[in-house]
Length: 294
Image (cartoon, rainbow, N blue to C red; front, side, top):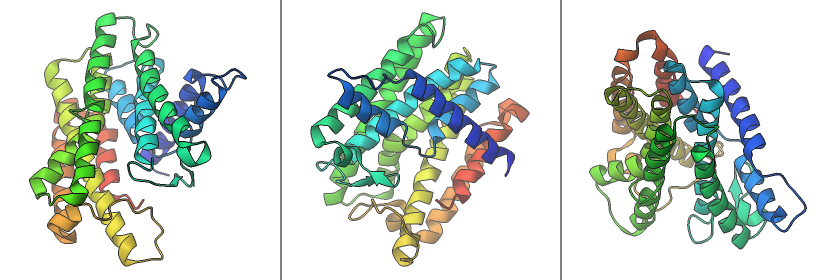
C-alpha cells in the first residue's frame, strides 16, 4: 500500500467516524425514517475524495484535525445530498448507488427528497457551529464559499446543464464549463476550505483552487474514459451514467481526452509549487486521479 493509499484509507475512516457522530441519532420519534435515510446515504461509503482534499489542504496550514474533519464532513453531506437527488426518477433515475439500492428505492421518493434536503441544510448547521472554528468570520467565509459551490453557480447549475445536454449538442468549451460547475466547484472549494480554516492569504487560496479545478476536470475525463472502456468491454461492470449526454470522450475522442487529462494533471501540480514538500501528497493525489481504474 502506497503512502497515498494509506492516507486515503485513514482519512476515509476518520470522516466516517466524524459523520457518524454528527448525524442525528436513529431515534424512535417521528423523524426516525428521515434520520435513517440520511444515515443510509451519507454513511454508505464512496471514495471520499472531497473530504480528503479538505483535510489534506488543512494540514498544509497546521489546522487542527477535528476542525478539518468537521468541515470535510459537511462537504460530504452536501455530496451525499446531491447523489440522492441525482438518483431520483425525475433526474438520472438510478436504482443502485454504491452497490446498494438508491435512497428512493430503499425508502421512497418523498423520503429521499427530504433526506437530501435535510443533509444539505445540516451541512450548513455544522459549518456555522462554533465548534468548527472559533472565529465567526472564518465560519461565515466557509458558509459563503461552500454555498456558492453547491448552488446555481456551482454544482446545481452544472446539474441543470447536464440535464439539458441530453437534448442539446454541446461543444468542448460548453462541456468544460458544465463540468467545472457540476464537479469542479465543489472540488475547488473542498481544497480551498483547508486554506480558509488556516487563514491563508488570498493568493494561496487561489493556488489551491486552481489545483483542484484541474483535478476536477481530470476526474471527469477519467470517468468518461472508464465509461467508454466499460461500454466496449462488457466484462467491466460499471454504472453507466452518460448515455445520450455529451462527454469529453464523445467530443474529443479517447486519445485526445487522455492527452488532455495528462496536460491538466501536470498543470495542477504546478499550482502547488509555492507549498514545497507540504503539498507532496496533493501532487501524488493528482497522478492517482489521472491513473485511477475505478
